[in-house]
Length: 363
Image 1 (cartoon, rainbow, N blue to C red):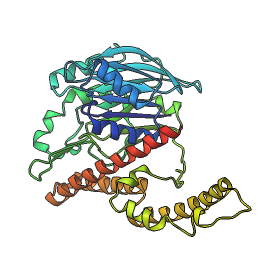
Image 2 (cartoon, one colour; image 1 turned 135 degrees about the horizontal axis):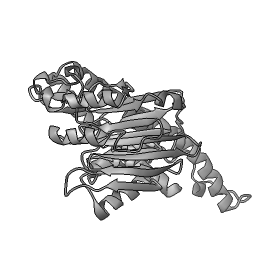
Image 3 (cartoon, rainbow, N blue to C red; image 1 turned 180 degrees about the vertical axis):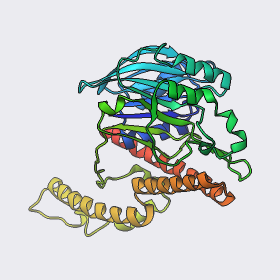
Image 4 (cartoon, rainbow, N blue to C red; image 1 turned 180 degrees about the horizontal axis):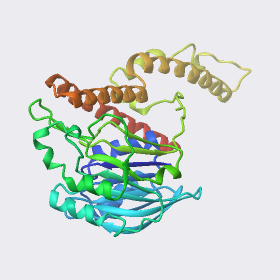
């Protein structure tokens, strides 16, 4: 079972759709939660349909602020128990029979409104009958170590947050990946970061699963990192099959390469054979030509264009490394490099979108 929570900072933008589809295609979550969607009504329905889940529900945004969406597959059933402007509390029933409570949080930027969140999201106010997982954007930190700008840490930190964690007997599930889940500022003197997104659990959560893995994914199309939560994670190998990629046609030298290599050997019209019908000769020739061109296109893809998935993953690894280094200190060179990598990733995701469209047409 995989759960992803993400402060997407607006779900109506085209860049969000591309980034969201990449996240879904890469990690295949069973449950996908989006906060600060800033979209409601028919526009929200249109976006949810594009994301491809069987079921979804929403806490609607107020005008152009807030909003919590949750989308899920047929691998589980979800029953909403409590709905609040800053959280949704529910019970999850997996097809395997496992049952647990989940609360998705979007804490207000205003400290006095967050205090209402802590008072409302407690065992005395919501129904918690099963092991409890709480995840999302809390817009709060527990210590100065979770923020780059110590002078402004009071904006995100308050004693009520720590007291709430203690009173509800919650445990931080820790994480792998970069330290700060939110970063802002592309110049050295304006850069800041904080760990605003996290996953917490009740003490009996450990009895529910053998292991829970929390990963801070690279930030794309938002200042916030998506949070991947895996229950009983298993190692899996990704397929790496060769396919013709429609995005190749956007590469300027591609048509010249095809023109140069298409005519391999004699064409059927130059090789008249009285013993073979024209149809059989065409089928035979195209079969040989397809294999030959596949090998040449594979070589061209590796040496010139580059595999989209490999290039995307390489950019993501580089981007994640740069963002980790920014945790330790904001340097103008790193900030410029991060901006460059995000632009490269945006173009690569655009090319991958063509591949998704091609695959959907085949299916």
